[in-house]
Length: 317
Image (tube, rainbow, N blue to C red; front, side, top):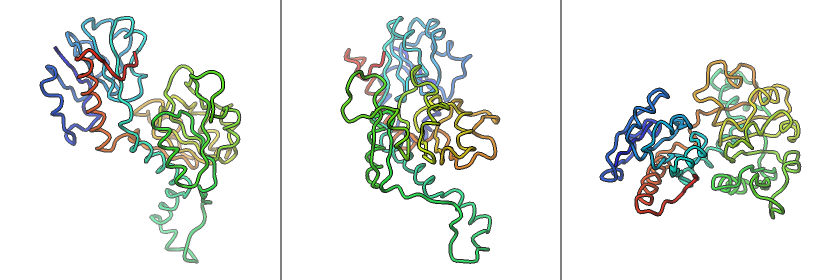
């Protein structure tokens, strides 16, 4: 049985142990795969592992031998799940592997914004502190998190862990109603109630047609003035020009993002423009501790083993 891994470089393979892949399948590992290389590389393969390489309907149709797609991540928006189901292809993802890493990164973004670490660091490096008339600089207003409200949109594995850490800082957690569930949702609050109440909104929901550009101009206008927005989920959840405007106008107090709608972003991306205040962006690496990357690799291996045994797990399509 032939297996293909389309983008091993996304895991920095030299830092990981791949020996669990041995003797499972006959593997071909590619560091990266361009869109025009997908069909040729998948020709004759029954199993494909992809982290971010897109497997759309046209690609799947051209690969009739495929039986299993293993997404080396939790998000599934890079695979056409309907097309896979129509062809009888099992699709599995990996959950839980980045719980500690993503939640830690979410808090790092939050703490950096609340303490204004970046502008204060720049003040030190530029010599402003050395020139100060007193022992400290207090030019950038800081915020205590204790007593503030942490709003969570997407209360899965990652949202729960971020909420747990927020509570450790003395914050009150409010959880938005689920997009999927119907009727009374005990312990959840409607979005219309959450947005004006939360001092921080943290996004942990998947990118779906329902959540695409969830955070648009109307959403931002309902947020508490001066609130902070965090996104360690998917860039497409945010209408990025609307976010830039909300930051420039001062409606929003700051934003910490680990994801953008286009990755890597073009140089003219609206959130990379000069003059956007209190915006902190990291390059989609919240998930990327070595421990997290090893766990996701082990999760892929277990998905393949269970599928081979006839009892697939973590099936999303």
